[in-house]
Length: 311
Image (cartoon, rainbow, N blue to C red):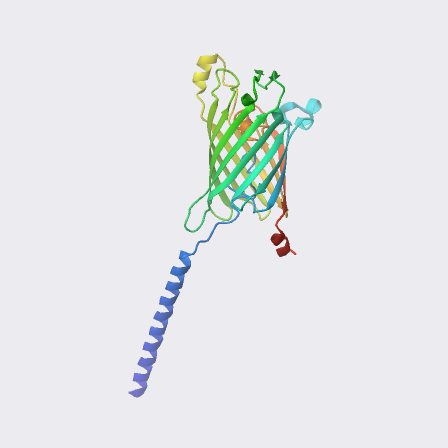
């Protein structure tokens, strides 16, 4: 009888101990769920293909961008070597003021444009926040001699420096769905102080969509599309001509090599800044107006503490 009582007492004690451990684990899990855990590396770089991502760069770090676009693939082998005989280039720098805020500037050979921009990460995806959000704005200066001809045949004349200015504003909203897939939407507004013709609106709104899918730790496939909200029927009724510009669509591959990000892509736009690829895309994929290009980004650190940790 004593043995049975002792056994029952032992079992009861073990049960109480087990329940206490479960209660303790539940309390620990509850406390852990209160801690903020941020999502890392939604995208590999601060640019998706032509457009921006929600990513900024680390404080006291500098990104050097080289963007290159060749001619149209359908330009022929003998005359233009499938577009490789032509080139457009943009050189850019962007610097991390803080981990959430960067400033950048670049120079594009298209319309001899200088662009100055800023991006600030407002929200970061975490276990308590479903998306990351960044605000982006840029100023573009066209330095072409007045009276130059655009690809559409329009003769552009400037009468003051203000007419050379264009402005872009974007809200970048992204979510890392899992370790492989990241998606982003980019509502955008482009304003040109001088419209191309009296039939073009000075302000153009566009909705961008983009994404990246990781094929491996170093290789990803990416895509982006900008749907311009233009009343093409109204343009046709006013001007008697078909609206000359198209929506921009691009496909690409990202290759990470340590401190470099190398991006290869195909697009129906030769533009490398929002003013050009959102507002001035003339090519269509259906007609083979596809431009091959690449971006190379190299990051340099000016943070002594970061350099010490890498030694």
